Amino acid sequence: MTRFFAPAPTASLVFLRVVFGLLIAISASGLLLSGWVGEQARSASEAFKWLGLAWVPLPGAPWLQILCATAAIAALGVALGLFYRPCAVALALLLAWALAADQALYSNTLYLIALVAFWLCFAPVDRRFSRDALRHPALGPSWPLYMLRFQTAVVYLYAGVAKLDRDWLAGRPLEVWLEPHRADPILGALLRPEWSPPAFAWAGLLFDLLLVPALLWRRTRLLAFLAAVLFHAFNAIWLKVFPLPILSVALTLLFFAPDWPQRLLGRKKQESAQAAAVGSAASPPRWLLACLCLYAAVQLVAPLRHHLYRGDVDWNEWGHEFSWRLRARAKTVRTSVRIVEPAAGMETGATLEGLSPLQRRFVERHPDGLGQFCRRLGRRLRESGRDIEVRARVLVELNGRRARDLVDRSVDLSRTPRTLATPAWVLPGPE
Image 1 (tube, rainbow, N blue to C red):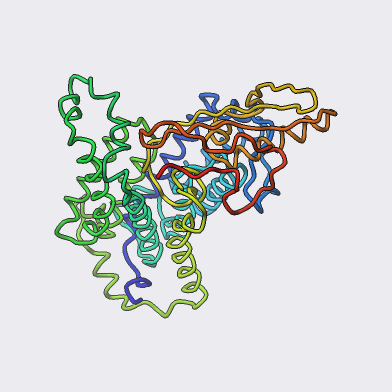
Image 2: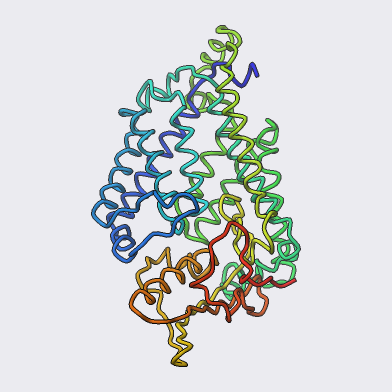
């Protein structure tokens, strides 16, 4: 407890602040200038709501673009240390709003970014501009640094736990992902052997489970960091993802000594001696300790909630959100929706109209999104005087297996209730 609340150099948190702010500013500006935000807003007629959060609004195109520009400005303020605290709070609130406004916007990347933004609101890194803070970092409480380390450890821990799966250990997802690359003139020789998919699968599992323990041990810390750099660089090049690989590498640097940027710049460890002179930290407020413990408990329990639901989370997606199941399966989904008029004996196909690209992906892959879409479609058509049923066919190929039905084709999804539990119309997956 003394170490957790004792004063410590803030240089490593300042470095994270600068990198994080620049990443979010670049990402938000890119989404805005490319027209992606406007396209998403114009093509989405209605948001998909989390249970209990139907009151959170999703504005139209002009306001959505203004909010994205605000997030970019706030992130730049975080990076530069200009009006840091208001900018950090504004950025955290905007990211939380994005997660809450539309269930289809959820991604593990956005969730992690929102959590990092939340903890940076409390980080003591607002006393100087970035350059001065790196050279002469002030002292601040250690607990924001430890909570960010904890959050990083949770991500890697549950990413590894998700891979403790029979299909993953056999390399089945890797077989699907590596197959298109086996003809590559450079990597082909490495990917063609039969042992290649299981070897890559076990390497990914060991990386996720052992990275944080290796970062915690001083003797293996540098080696673990280099492994993280190679791993995330490979993912960035192969998967073409941004900004998660850069943010992940920046978070691993938090496991080094808090004054490592100062040492890198050739400064002596003055702040460490100063921290020792200050003495042990005062007793923390009980409310603060209770809040930190509650947060830690939620982060440790929430990723396991899929065990409360019927079926395999990789198959039916129930409990997949907030679980840090990072690329633990290979999945291909083909979805078609049909409008049936029993009295007339007619059946027509329905397009996924009024949906943004992200919403369309959510409807196609998640039964909860499919149910919300079918209920809206049925309600709209019945209001026009038509007596209809809405049925769907969803074929899923999981980890290279043959396609199977995810939902019962005979069920009228427009009249099914929305529940927390896995619905009865969601079929069990392959054994």
